[in-house]
Image 1: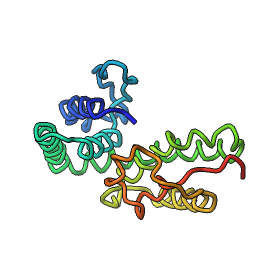
Image 2 (image 1 turned 120 degrees about the horizontal axis):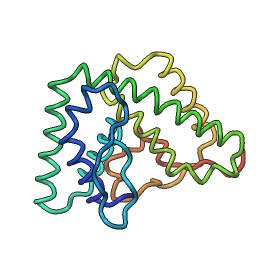
Image 3 (image 1 turned 135 degrees about the horizontal axis):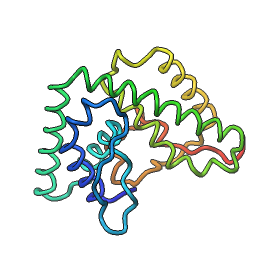
Amino acid sequence: MPSFYYDLWYLRAGVEQFEHYLLADDIYWHLGVQPPSGEPPYPQLTLGWLLLANKRVGLEADTAKQEAEVSQLSNQLESIQSKWRIAWEQKAAKEFHTRLILWRDYLEEYRSNPEQNYDRYKYEVSRRVLLDLLNQNDSQLIEPVDMDLLSGLDQMIRSILQSSNFIWDANLQSGFDQERYWYLYGLLPKTI
């Protein structure tokens, strides 16, 4: 998982650009910021990645100064969400559909060739987390057909998932309870 500062810098840059991004038609937005030295390149700015970065930094802040900055950025994000609620929900619905198709494609690749794809699950499951974050308020704008597809994919995963401890960094576990984020408490088998 990325470092606290990786997520913090992404969140800072994202909040700074977020109102412009939210009002644009694009789902993906060039962030234009470099990650901390030694960290991977940033993904493009999306609502989902911004929500995930916000959640992770809130769990990883360990000094009063870090907590204060994270709180300020979270409040700014909530303020933008309140101000542009309809734009937020529309953007979330568009991204939800796009992420759902990517998640479905990975699971189809896994079913076609489990041995070649089972070990990608720890990374690919971030798409499933993003789906939960994008639908955090159970948005009525998510298409019923998308919710049906997600339900079907979840049933397939539940039928084969091998139970395990939390699969991401332990310091994030408190923010991802096992009931809602059940898919972070298991791994796909090498063969099905």
